[in-house]
Image (cartoon, rainbow, N blue to C red; front, side, top):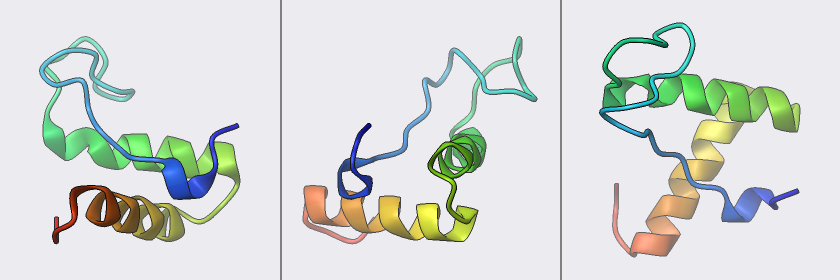
Length: 65
């Protein structure tokens, strides 16, 4: 229900690794799995979700991320 212009992406490092790494230590590199799932849920391409969430983070933090 969250609008796309309000979504950000994060990991719960070092805990709660996403599938397919469940049960192992989480790593920031696994954020791609979070983006993939968010894109699936919103029914948009992964590349679009990555672009949107990057723009949102840059707008929120006021700098390039």
